[in-house]
Length: 325
Image 1 (cartoon, helix red, strand yellow):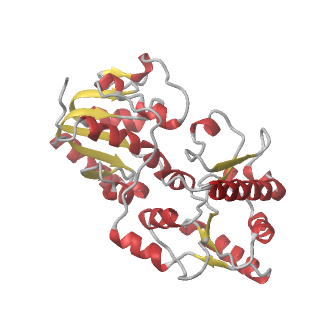
Image 2 (image 1 turned 45 degrees about the vertical axis):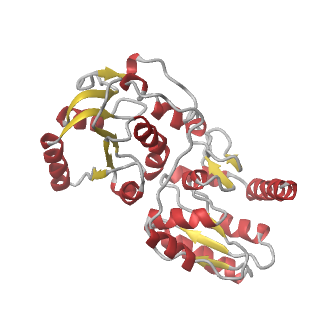
């Protein structure tokens, strides 16, 4: 068996991409427990990576020129035994980083111009399925066993747990976390729809906690005001990092898709009708409902009634499951 002492994983995508790549990090550490694992991530996922128990060192891929220069120096001055780029397609950023990286074995997709990888994933049969299976496909060329039915994992700091506890009201029902942000304009639901949903599904004594990115804070504040005017107990979460939100997701019924799947929490997720994206990024939770827009239409066109039906259906399943236990 080839032993790798210093391993790097290049995953500078969105925070959700990082979360879905954590089974890769866990598999590496299980097979090479004495190795030092460095993860190169985007700024949004950096805190999650630093808190993860399988990751020893975190480097940030930031597009600001002076920060990219700093990362380039790190790549040129460190030597790795193994470099893994789990992207599921050729990437210019990935090829450039792999070109700079000093590693004996490099696994990833070679492009038409830059071909820095010693093991080209384009030559290996596509594993298909969920994004997690696609990411894990880079383990085979490195001689690392591919786990089956892998689930994302996260590390939670004591400070994040304390922040999450402060958001919960002692003696009250567990709140429901609602995330209105989506990252892409075609994946957003309208504020009017969110208010109508909260009015339709709210139960006596129930509290909704609204989460959003800083850019969507004005829309979230408007939803809270409108819902409160309709008699729905709704609070806006204070600004926090993703580690804090992950800790809160662990405690509540969440709506942050991949964080929720990490802790196998019940979730209703809204998706634009686009394949293979829906298959690739479906919730990895055993307690989930997906509501998908009509072909060719954005998430904003999903009727409120469909989401209400999904929420009620999931609640009925959870209630039946708890009675059986």
